[in-house]
Amino acid sequence: MIDKNNLINNTQSYGGVWILAEVAGKAIDKVSFELLSRGRQLADARSTELSAVVLGWRINQSDLEELIARGADKVIFVESPQLEHFLVEPHSACLLELIKQYRPEILIAAATTTGRTLMPYLAVRARAGLTADCTELKIDKETGGLLQIRPAIGGNVLATIITPAARPQMATVRPRSTKPAPMQKGRTGEIVRINPPADLLKSCLQRLGFESDQSTHSIQDADIIVAVGRGIGNARNIRIVEELADALDAAIGASREVVDRGWLGYPHQVGLSGKTVTPKLYIAIGISGAVQHLAGMQTAETIVAINEDPQAPIFTVADFGIIGDLFEIVPALTERVRQARKK
Amino acid sequence: MPIFKERSTKNSSGKWVNDKNIAMRIIVPIKQVPSSDDVQLDPQTGTLIRQGVEAIVNPLDLYAIETALSIRDKHGGEIIVISMGPAQAAEALREAISMGADEAVLLCDSVFAGSDTYATAYVLSTAIKRLGEYDLIICGERATDGETGQVGPGIASFLNLPVITYVSKIDELIENHRKQSKHPEGIRVHRLIETGYEIIKADLPVVLTVVKEIAIPRLPTLAGKIRARNLQIPIWSASDLGIEKNQVGLTGSLTKVVKIHKPCIVRKSEKITVENELSRQEAINRLISILQDKLLL
Ligand SMILES: Cc1cc2nc3c(=O)[nH]c(=O)nc-3n(C[C@H](O)[C@H](O)[C@H](O)COP(=O)(O)OP(=O)(O)OC[C@H]3O[C@@H](n4cnc5c(N)ncnc54)[C@H](O)[C@@H]3O)c2cc1C
Image (cartoon, rainbow over all chains, first blue to last red; front, side):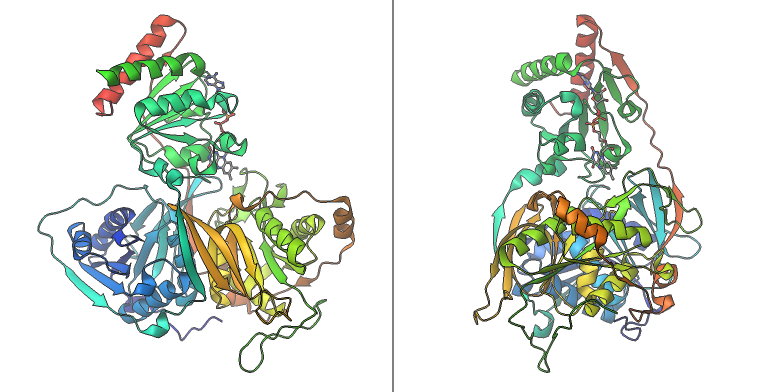
């Protein structure tokens, strides 16, 4: 299966940094701007060009231009009705052709359901090394190679991974692990449109429909997350934090203990095996702060912890800690927030 | 050599030849993982040191096994679990057998050690090719130790099959319109993505990776445990699979771990202990002022 002649993995002949823009329906998803922010740094460190690849259908010109305004030097837009929704075979086939033609040295995508499916599929086809779920990417000053940094062993350590010989160096990047690249007025770049040949678009899969369920989305987009841990005691008590979340217009997060006990659904789980979140404010209530939980929230702008145990590790990452009984503090806090909001 | 009956694969025109007497054949690749996160890394190679740590079936693979079992409950057929790992990974296979899987194969060779997801998917897909004809390959979403989720799609890619990831529900197996075959023609599933559920239809064979939502894994049965204890599990080495030493393990991997370090977090933490009404008010006032500073109120 390994066809060494398929791609000549001669690192010298590869150049340029690519990000794979994430498309949601007919629009560019915001996570793409986070990739641009990563990609721009890498391209600058390598003194090379940053390209954004878009696979989709009927994407507005203004959306493509926004990619340039946020840091891309070039946008490669592969357009076809068959690329409107993600299906692994046509997406992978189109990208493989682009890689063969343009030979980028780095390709990064978001560690979303799309990126985490497409990238490993493509990496095998391209015989390229791939690192999952990176939280940091850097260029090695000596070798010029990509340093791919990701949490390992239950988030206890960070591992730095390299791809010594195979190209492109591929990585998926955790959503919300960096800030989106800002718009810069006056940035210019090139937009290349490509109509892929039919044989690249074949698929044994068919997308028959879609059932929207936004409950899974809210926690990653929220400015405030009120997160609850085992300290809440039982499912009925969840109401106490729901009321606070409601008063604050916040999303509800949870530790794995809470999810495993069925008190809240998996979409609420924050941490290594749940979501990574970077809200403006994270309020951890009755959460001890295990490393696996911290792995998902320690990049929040401000962290507040409410816990009766002064030794709880959550306090080591908190900007502000309240040591005390959550059942006393939270309802009183909710009341104060409601009053403040009324004014 | 294999204990498996010879099966027809593809005829000259590349069409699947369905033997009327064989119902569905499902392959479930599983991984043995440390039961806790308290494992050490080899500072030299950056790979996991597995000795001395209690090992279990990757919890997320139990959902793949359960999915296969419930398909077999409804449609009949055969489930083969395979695992690449050290000799003790046979225990993980035995657990799958005790839950109800039919056959197991262990892919074990010292040259496999240290394989990255590319090399691992290569070994597993090579073994799957050797198992002959199949209808479905079902994987867990990811392993709880490596946490990459790359092996399932990697296997699909090596086998030139499509993959549907994050499957949360099997809606139906689509019957073969020729009816004389017990092999279904396709499958329809729900796939959990960030914004909801996609409904996807696929021709068989196809690779699925499943999420927790799909089922509740059953417990091993007594009869299953007895069968598991007595089952001979064939062990396939690299040479059995026709794999060269330099295609797998650390040398065959395209990625290398070069450094392991502890993350450091610095936050100046301010604390208030709530002991009475007064300190509670003080704490709440402080929090309200944080909210106001950040324009969140
Ligand atoms: C591979 C792996 C992956 C994992 N992934 C995740 C993950 O993604 N997310 C995650 O969260 N965990 C994860 N875990 C589990 C993690 O190790 C912890 O077990 C979990 O985070 C603990 O949840 P908790 O803080 O709610 O519970 P506990 O650790 O039991 O903490 C409860 C806290 O509540 C406090 N408390 C109790 N009563 C009160 C009260 N009345 N008032 C105030 N405080 C009170 C206690 O002092 C205690 O600190 C993972 C583990 C492993 C091994």
